[in-house]
Image (cartoon, rainbow, N blue to C red):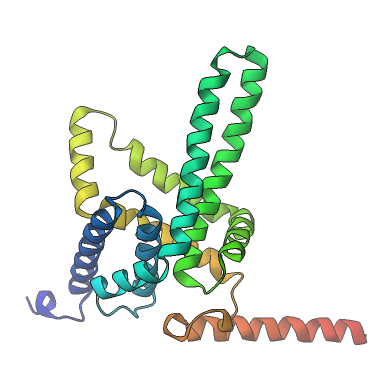
Length: 241
């Protein structure tokens, strides 16, 4: 019983984290209802999850709304561009329905290649807006590059999102259960797993001075700075020899 009421216990921390995810999920759903604001909502959710991972999060609602407001413009622009792209893809699918089968297959292959790349860039862009201070164009460019160079993490993110959707559309009962889970904690839980992948992907390319002080992981970047110094020393030694 002492274990259950100890606020430092793993059980207590688990329920505390679960409670934060439930609140975060509700905030995400409410702010995403206008549809146009989904980009800002995803970015704000990522920002809160990053802070939760670094144990720098005070209040979910305060942190979420602050991130939502500060990243609203850039994230909304990215989201609207993606929405336009999706609409154009759907229109193209209708137009090619009467095209020669060989040409139709080529078009389908092209769309099947471009769409995942576009979706990857958008997802990484939202995560970068949540974590870094960059301009809109720089954010998109870096998101594309990091997404390609961090392919294992990118594939994991797509697998998590795809599995989350497919698991709930098998039967009528599974749809009802999935809807309940998504409304309660699903979006935040999927984001929690994806943010772990984003965090690992960004860590490979990030310097300490690229983060604001309130999101800085001192231990991690001190370790990375040490490794970079050692690498530079080895290069200098090789040049001298």
